[in-house]
Image (cartoon, rainbow, N blue to C red):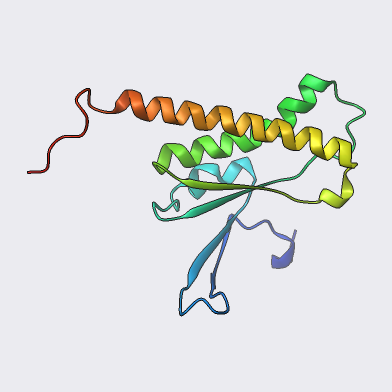
Length: 143
C-alpha cells in the first residue's frame, strides 16, 4: 500500500459541532476495529465520553453453525465493551449495527438479538463487579 488513503488509520480525530448545539463541540475519535490497535486505542478513552460500538451483521451465514455464528457476531462487541468498561467506570456505550440493508431481515433480527443478549449479560457482570468492589458500609464519609 503506497497511497495514504489506502492505509488503515489507528484513529482519526475530528471536531463536530451539531447545528443548534449552542456552541457544544464534540471531539470524535474514530478508532479502527483492527485488533492490532486495541491497546493504543484504549489510551484515548475518556471518562466523559460516549462510546459507539459499531458492528456489522454477517450476511452469508450458510457456512457457520448457529453457535459459531453467534460467537462470531457477539465476541468482538463484548470484547470491545470489556476494554471500555475496564478503563472507564460507568461508561456510556451505544451499540450500532451497520450494513443492515445487506442482511436478510430474519438474519438481522437473530443477530441483533444475540448482540443485545450478550450486551445485557456484560452489563449485569459490570454491575455485579462494581457492587462487589464497593466498601461494605457504603462510600467513605467526606472529610
